[in-house]
Image (cartoon, rainbow, N blue to C red; front, side, top):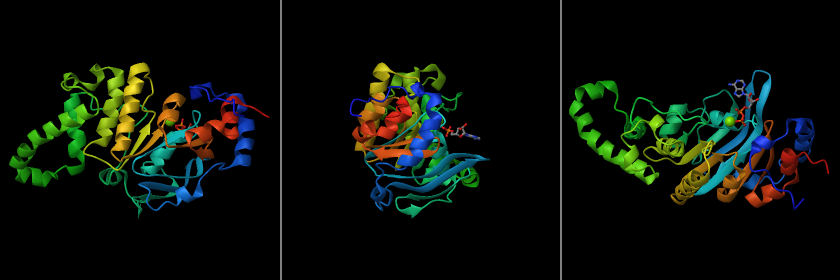
Length: 294
Ligand SMILES: Nc1ncnc2c1ncn2[C@@H]1O[C@H](COP(=O)(O)OP(=O)(O)O)[C@@H](O)[C@H]1O
Ligand SMILES: [Mg+2]
């Protein structure tokens, strides 16, 4: 099996292998999974026994993983595997069952907005910006959203709002620059800047005023070349800043080069967990992409 290499794009996955895969998946179960890490009390985010159902469809079954500050956890799997549902469930924006712990604290029932305020943030597969605002204004909104003053206080203390505006503007410009978005783009609308920069902007806005855990759903979707390298550098830099990163990614060369560990799922089932090298060698993963029987 040593010679098997996972295709660069998971879109290469062959639908006719699915029946075979299901049996293989059941057989291998959590091959390579590290149960000790799942129970890691020092994890920035720990997810236990995550199951997501849409009616009769089980999108995710009994998934468990954890990520530490200063670590990149990759989640890979073919289209429809349940990757985005995993993020939706972890951020409590879709019905599910699971236990989730943020810095050791049970946050299983905490609402999406409050999770974000506590430092658990996500990006989406599709960019979602305030299209009518400038890039800088989007960044300002991202910074103030966690500390937004309630309406009555705003009315009573308008001077306070004015006083903080300038400081927020400076912080927003710093945020953008530190995420590789140069000043020349700050006064433009998000839709008018290059797509590669838009993907970096999505990560910057999720980070906002700082966070503990970033869930990134296909951050490199639609980009390549130099943009991909810049994004890789950014994610490695965030890891250096001790952020815990969970990255769903279809570009195998990217995720294999930056992730510390990878969880591979298919049809809602965790096929394997391990280092990039272990995942590359894992027979179940190879079969998932190549459909080998032997
Ligand atoms: N809101 C939804 N309602 C019903 N089915 C959904 C919904 N979202 C996702 N699904 C289904 O759940 C499965 C997993 O989807 P998803 O999590 O988006 O997979 P991935 O991100 O790995 O491509 C797919 O079969 C998809 O069609
Ligand atoms: Mg998805």
